[in-house]
Length: 301
Picture 1 (cartoon, rainbow, N blue to C red):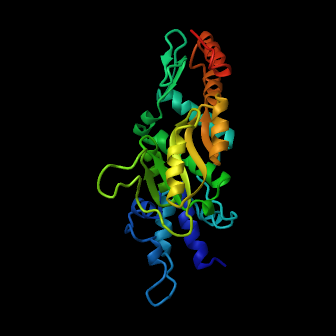
Picture 2: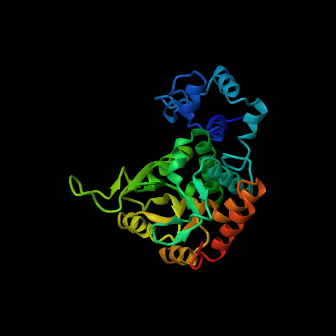
Picture 3: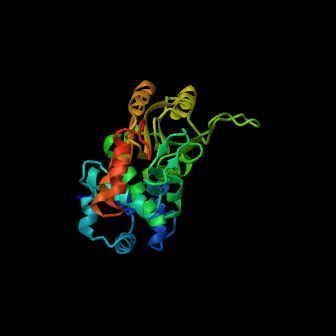
């Protein structure tokens, strides 16, 4: 027999699997936005409220799901599924998205100058991704799935976006996971409350916070954000990025020193593999890029 909790759990998981919050799914189905709010599930006098069969029929219709799909969401060990792809499939699809949205660029003949001053045949701009709604949705589904699998919902009390590029991704991930969001400045603002952390971070109980940014090269810049969160009483054991360079030894060293575990959707190695598999670039360019990835410190045009 399906319990009251079973039904509401299935609704939450159906919503998340299609990229909606429960209220977003209600709106999509033409229902009142508050239909699936937690406050509506129990009456003021303590009686359990059940969703109507009409409501369930509507959400199944708009998500192109069957009742069997709905039931299967109950008995899955408590896991919320955002995608059925494997870890490797997510990485390679993310790499294709990066290439096709021109968020990563290859140019072996006219190299790019990175912020460090280093010359590189590759360049990435994760900020560009936020303008591509469908692709962004897929990437955030992948991110939410990775965090579900590798961190666990119970180990995330709040999602923190790092100023500035991490703020939109922090918001997207927080929405997917239905978790509170905050964001962290690089330094306290110079007026008002002089806050470095914006939003509400509980002052009791050492909340478990995951830091979200767009990418990681060597990871050194994350220390400012992690220190600020920990100084405010948060427990920070994990950080998430859309893209990790995956080619600098210092990255692994910095992450270890900061006492966090890094989670990323894709690396340059995934981009190179996808580029080769789909013939995005000529052989000369791919060979030059591979040479750079193996020895970025000494690469030259």
